[in-house]
Length: 313
Length: 322
Image 1 (cartoon, rainbow over the protein chains, first blue to last red):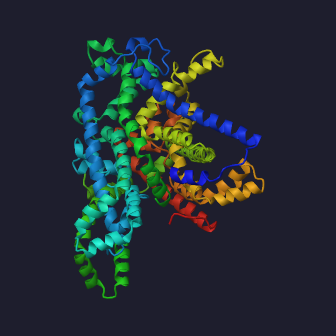
Image 2: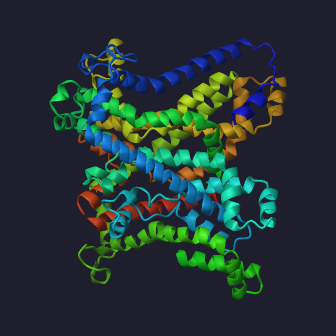
């Protein structure tokens, strides 16, 4: 899409612009710059606090640059067994969940992209209907309970295995592939499975990257299913849920600097080396950094995915 | 529902192939590879997405977890009647509609305005940087976002500091402690998180507009605003309509995470929405029947809204969903 924008803009070598035009441009650039500042400031501020000496942060006045640099906050958080374990679970569910979702979605999408498939319509309708009808929180909870998935890692994987939105964007992508490639493969005597694995899957890399990003972000960010199904089992807790617990505690006291008392008191005597305020900032960064580092590189892909799925879905 | 689609699908398959059922099964056998690749997921779909609908029956029962389905005592519409007489439920309903209304209007307006502004940027690099940064809040979790909003709004946060320095106020305001402020905070927070993301579809639609139109308008002396109003906006109108329909269907979904994470004892009268109500009654208090009745009410209303919106747009001759 960005490429398209370039193409439409470039040939239009505009004539000398009028004053009104220039004023508009200045106002526009100023506004958009301001928007970037408003968007970024909270992150930069949190990053600065996480890299600043904890006791010094209490004095306030940290904006986007640490006053007394230190990595102690990170060392403290990583040394905390609960946090470390939760991070591992987060990584595990992100990796397994993403691979499973991408693979299964691609497989179903391939079958419903095949115009000659007898069950095509039935499968498509069955999936799309679930976008509008769902049992709701409690019936889903009862189902998970009856399936024995409570207190289990697999409750993070099974319920969200295939998303309709993902299905639609992959199917649209496959349908857009040149028919001749699939056709020639079939004539060569390639079976359905080989066709899917060695021809369709590799060709779908761009759309699968999009789906992988969406799923990865979803899995990494999810805390509600942990809260709902596994809150009694600390071994299955995730980073986001640990952060949520800290926030919930600080919500009661309403002041950011007294945040996470429960966490600190559950810690140890080192607690006076790091403060709840700094722990919270550090965990916020840890919980968002992996995503922040990945998404800009996939921008081209997800913009395309949203364009297809946003309207069709 | 399930049965209807089964017969619809198989009958259409049959009508296409005159030889009927035997032919259907022969094709099914021929395409067994495709069947193997999709039917297991149909079973998954049935279990995880359709089976829970059975739980709706609980809304009509005096549900006792220890009893089997046939031993439950039926309650008819009693729970629904209770809900609509319950002051708390009505307040929750008001909050839900208010917040999703704010979401809808604010979300659309800000995203369209931002897309229009971005579309006017001629420096490609600058545009790309703004876009990348504006997507950022969409990718972080609501837990992180709520934490950021909390510390920004806390008495020693940056907003209060700015207000104090410019002498608007003497001492820090506890923004999240003032119930009437909650809808505003929610609206601003949601816009902050998603405005950039929501521009994607509009910007894509804008690249489809024929540049010749702009050139012609420029020849005729149309200024920046005139071109935006008469060319760009009409150009993305179909996309706006489709998205509007989809969103009207979600009018009962005001979100769950922001309200739950930013809500507290002080602002509960304005922050508690349907989803939180369902969670509290169902999971915390174990009143499944009432909670499912509330959830079911939500789904049914959403479905009706979607249907109405789609019909209106059909009448107006606009793009529609189905």
